[in-house]
Length: 351
Image (cartoon, rainbow, N blue to C red):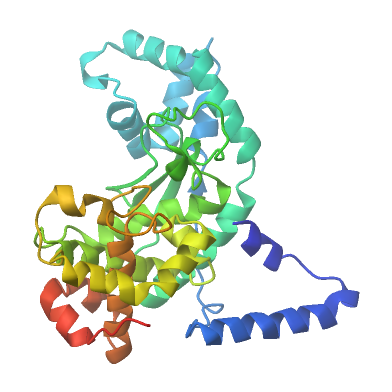
């Protein structure tokens, strides 16, 4: 993310005083927010980011056979996964010649080629994204020391997959989901403005880690609003642990004003859920916009963003973890009973 990259840039000697002041100010802000960020500088992480997109689109269309042999040799698991599951090429039903022709057509298609070219402009060296993910996986190893660090593969899918986890320790990053809110080829029918505003470089590390956290936490138990909000609150809590320096607006895909609105109206939101008997509702028509991407939350003022139940769920999980400070994050993931977690959290919204 831009902020992270700037913070890691070496400072000139003449700026030491300003840097010291900025550090104190940032530390103060963190303390005000109750953050206790562990020191992970000693944790060694070898993060491997494979530019599959570049390897694929740099193939010589006059020598597809040898190029595909090289690609398969270098990325055997991801190559098969990409063509069959991401791009929908029925590899097993095609002859070798037909498959090579399909690959040639894919990388020569003007529309897809234009997407790739834009990705190279926006994500030429991935320097900022690698830096953010490098630190995120240091936190990952701090909280989950037994877990292996996945290999990250970059790809484009013509706006089909943003990010995903697969076998063989694969974590895939869809670069065409981060080309900027004003990128002209995002169809507003599928990507309305409230979605597009988070489809940029600043959100890319969060987008990738969303897929990792989703896979770690697994499926929710139950279909009540309470089950969903606690489940999603746990995911936000873990995401926050991996990206503690990232603004909440990015973690939530909110605007800063929307984050502020939630912070200022926490008690009112909680009262709304209680007074309208929503916590134990299973009627998706009533609760969908409270947990899924939406421009607003029904029954609340127009300033209220969508997914407000997830934000409240995050606050409940924070309260629970504050009362259980020695609980490993693995145990939080295993806590599947939303009702019990709510009761143990003894959550009291800020007024």
